[in-house]
Length: 357
Image (cartoon, rainbow, N blue to C red; front, side, top):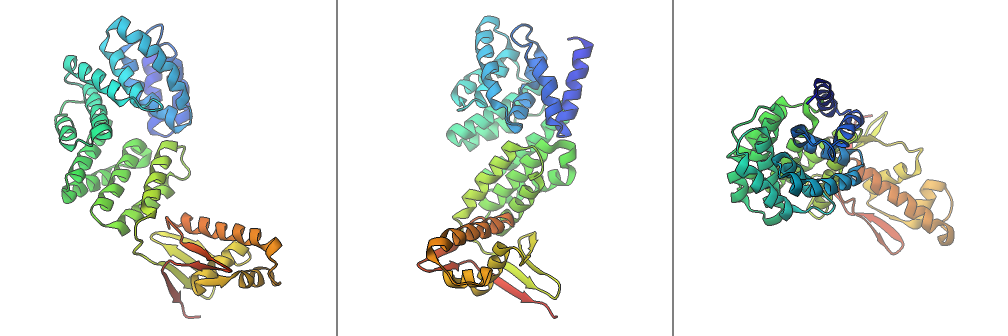
């Protein structure tokens, strides 16, 4: 490989870990456009990074082109690094083609049992076994056989995989130790991919351990950390977890603090100041305090007039929807506001704290 190209790839890696994903994409796109004409080993080393960038910035449809080219190249060349790339492309295809990937990864590992690509191949194969069969024993054999690699980022991902295996085996304490060590060392500015992977594994750990309050707290914290970042896949994963929590019992109440200068609602580690000049926030306060409001009461409080069904039903619906969005924003997965005839009722638990005025 030309020295200039290697320098560009090194830059792409720096951009990736610094979350400059568009800059990373621009370099890797140029490099992978050469794939049909000049396939190189480094295409195999960077395919995982490229696929992740395509996913995070919303260009995953471009993967279809590279998948088609790799399907043409792989039987012609019989080259291991092309085989590995095709497997990674299959795993990340829409929809994923895990079974095709398994056959290619197993073939690749027979000829390349050690090194960085072998470590990545084993983790990818473990992902396939987990997705297809939930085979914890097979995943354990693969993950705990990885000992030979040079790239530090592989070590971080390997640790998250080991924590996941221990979690799935019910060894929650050992899994927690690994996650705590990882999160003490990692920062999103250093390696966002491993960092968010570790946090997502930790949410699942506390969920399976039965520590739902802690799982929800971590979920809210992670959602807030990812909020302003260009991480579509991470946000989708967190949204799926949040949805799965919606049907589970919430043990913690919403805390509503009423003070001299401010009124604040909080849940877990998130807080929002209530601004009564905004109708939906005023409605939030009333529902949390009174729990039940008729449509007539809602209109009188918000607009100081009588309720008229023909014009006010859509208005009330809109403001109740805004209340639900506000409560979701602080981490309440399922704001349980129920319409019963002519009134609305908030069925969650509220802890009212009136501070001395």
